[in-house]
Length: 489
Image 1 (cartoon, rainbow, N blue to C red):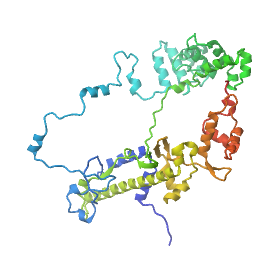
Image 2: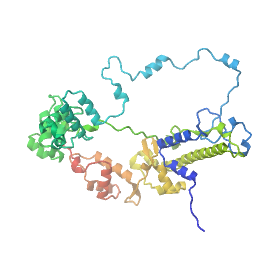
Image 3: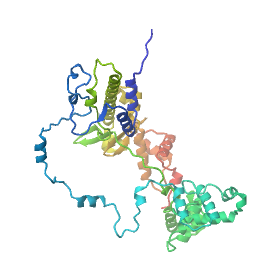
Image 4: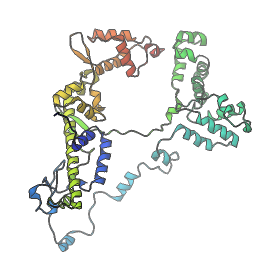
């Protein structure tokens, strides 16, 4: 004899629904509605009771009265009228709450006016395009010979997403058919034509060439133009290492003059290809909404994100307990699956609500004061509070989002490890990141704070953090080292 845990189909379905994001859950619900005739959406104002179609006393009820569980109950009453009386009460022209002119003006607000020559319908309605397609579109408008067009297409294929030419001209030239007799000078000439395309700086082989191409497209009257061109052509390495004293000596410029030249260079885009956005936008639908009412934080589910379901009362009324025919067995199974699905959705919502409420209870300081007041929190803390396993909490917090007055955050954002303080307490790693970000934002850019200095400042606040930990947190925030943050004031 032995004991073992068997996962029933209902439990497997509940676990699967629990770990789905809102968008995936909406798709799952749509598939369930299409495959199970017993399920239907509950629209606002629908009549139904909370009776069980499979109950013993439900057999003798009319089909319109036999209805199943739902997320929200609503009852309406309608007055029964004779056909003639009904027709008499309907006027010939029903009143409306708006006029056609209002609708037209609203819908036409985004349309171009008569004098708007720059409006382009495709830019407002089409999906994002890739950098290659954007360059090919410009290539089709440029007059070229067939050979030059072949070279141009090959060059465009070699341009990466940042806008730089990945292959050398020698490699590109060697890749053509020898019968075409294409020389290196022809490839370079076509490249110069592509470098005149938009975005400015595309097709460059180095960072200096990219910046120089952008400078050449600026008006000739731009202040410090010649010095900026000389800087990116001859001294780009010194600029990257921020050796300002060496730059001032070689370029024979004063500190104030060099600062203006550097400001002109910094106004350019080192990655011109990033201006062309080819990826589709990713949408986030919050599962939980948190708002403050007086001095209390209220947590509620986003009812708009999940459609309300119920069992179709008419189909459920056709099920008979004593009938063993194939049709009745099919309807009985579909009814049971529909009830399981609705129950799994209810279980998912209840679990999500419990976890979100406990997270808000632990992180009230964050909601009131921001990241610096974030408290340490791990899955075990929430699991103990709600009486569930840590794996369940992990599923609930994955790809689930909370809408707060401070923004939309994934539930996992509120979990962080702790660091000991001098007073014997604990400080959240998220709070430490926020403090590091604040210290870097307020530092002297002539003498930026090193990781050791930041660790010393944190220790002065009672937070004991090693220099390596500070470097790890700084890199996770996307903050460059102190040597790369140095600026010429």
